[in-house]
Length: 81
Image 1 (tube, one colour):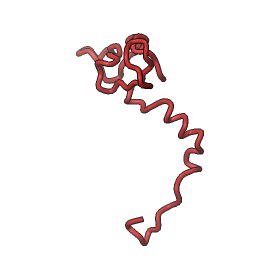
Image 2 (spheres, rainbow, N blue to C red):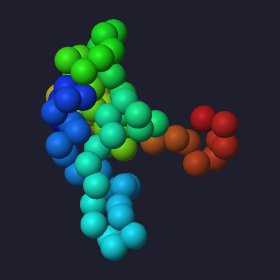
Image 3 (cartoon, rainbow, N blue to C red):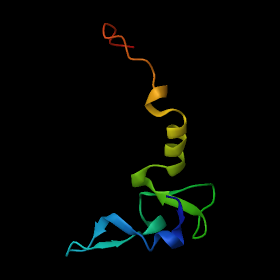
């Protein structure tokens, strides 16, 4: 899910927890997993959590046919291809 950094700071991060086990909020661009969705950077620019992969790339892969568009199986007798 793409969100601005300002909006993402109100979402919980699965990696950040307190010593009590409570979840903490997203750190946005201060986190090494944060990825910008475009060429722009800043609080108003869209971005996403890199743990979940790129949301646009995943949707393109699903529309491209998914497993139905997979390459043919490799020849078991040829270890190089």
